[in-house]
Length: 168
Image 1 (cartoon, rainbow, N blue to C red):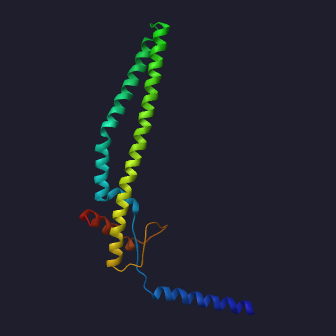
Image 2 (tube, helix red, strand yellow):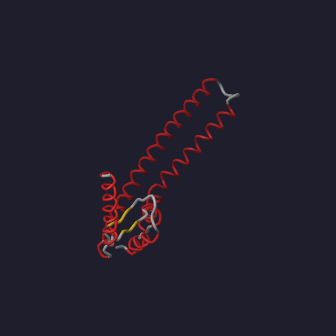
């Protein structure tokens, strides 16, 4: 009997707590970080800048890859008529060029990822300032970046994207 009364009291208190939270009129917002990364004006500018910055290296990698393919096809075509030492020398040259290409490719990816992360870090700093400004000016109690479910009416991503485009 005592346990039943305690359960009823706990349930009544839980309902009262839920009502108190509802009565507080919390203002909650949500931002879609992926959209900001993909669609914001600063992200697009950074992407174009990275493309421009790394284009010469990408072209050099494509040139080297083409060179290796040509060398390999030439070796396959002429292998039957070549002397053993010439074939071995070309195979060694192909191996050296392939290793050099793989090293260059790895360095390119590492450098590109490093620069992309730097640009994203700057974007997120700027976006967080904009989000704080929106939260303070519109009296938000909580703004979330990740959620399993969110109602579209609390999504403020479009306002953040507009503020980033305006340069705030």
